[in-house]
Image (cartoon, rainbow, N blue to C red; front, side, top):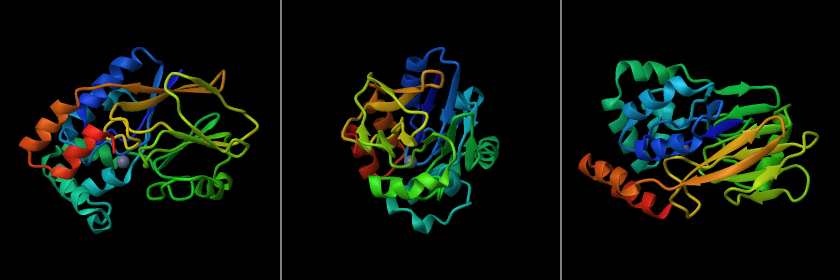
Length: 238
Ligand code: ZN
């Protein structure tokens, strides 16, 4: 069994709750955006970095180490990146520099955004998913970036929106793009942290939701004067 997490965004309380829920799962893969938006980049990296088999780079990870132009970010995302860049330790900056843009495993391809554009493209709908199916060879491609838990399949029904806890069987002869949602800033209207469990042998995924102490994250963000809009959205999961 493999736990797949994404978009932690410096939210230590969310990450701790998810790691507790994951328990002794054999492997953890992270699809990027470890930092940005939230208040605890160093603590998040120190907690997660030794636990990962695969570690991907997201646009915020690159933005916070000066490898992406922050003018392509929204003003609040840019402010949070500048805050992060100021407090990141040298060691953690080096860790962010070591992240990969694309990884492949036996049956899986892993990217932050899309197989066509690993860092930037958002796979938000079936049309964009279909444009991306020819850009990976494996039966399944895991993506993050949109913060929306969803499965897009080549066969019908093309879109499956997750029901937490339900085991979904995928077809090894089909192609699927699977997004585990976000640990640190969910955007599907549910403020609980999101991740998935992937059973490679059975070829199934289970979407998981985990409540965490949203207020504790919001309080540190307030104290550190992070943008109000970023603090507020955590409470709504948007
Ligand atoms: Zn993100």
